[in-house]
Image (cartoon, rainbow, N blue to C red; front, top):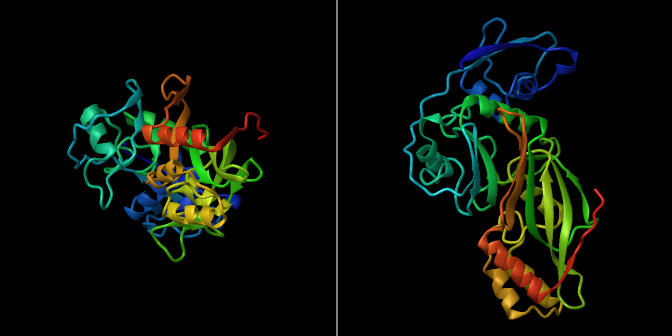
Length: 344
């Protein structure tokens, strides 16, 4: 429902960015949504002046009003696209998103998105609090990443799930195949992420960027005979949810995702390096690696509290067929060593 919320800055808030402060203080407000409200003129000072600069600094005792508008009517056309539904009730729907499907409309993806499919499936019940182009969307995964995400079917559920995302009680677990093997075999990547200073379509680890934390542990090492690990399968948990976070963090760690041409080294280059080191790469393995043409990342598990009942819920999604085939090939053509014990 449309409403307004008044906030007053304390000593600990002095000097903070307006968008960051609002996301910390306003109820169920993410930083991206705060930026959207600022850009649309829904944030004003105690004197009634519209605050249009998201980077403006907060002052002690500053009063700010946030107007939460009524969700706008959708201008998208529903599309009857088949969905792999893991769970559904009157409040939420959990989807196993396939590779190649964009979550919400964006430049270059105006049709065939998950949102279009959800509008056809859920009808008028779909939450609008996420904005006209992202109804019900609480979190997202990249087009070429497969796996689980939860969608809110009404505003109350959306607010509850957004709060879980904000306080990090919504748990997201991924499986990834990377080049090489991290040392130590488990750990935490705590490195801030922001827009790349040169390549503006990419993200990067940037000093002064937004805090980003990824926990990882190694499940399996894959090695050619007599060599160090050529690849590894990792299990990762997001503590924060920045754009392309896992891809950026693994690249920063020096173990980019297989198939990720944006943040990693190409498969062709990796294979050339193996051969230059006089490693004998089986033809079937080389074909399998060259044929895997997207980042090897799968949102495998999701944990949340049901927004109506408070019941803890956990969902899992099996590997898609291309990842299953990759895993089977690696198991059969390399020395695969499963790491069964971990220290967090």
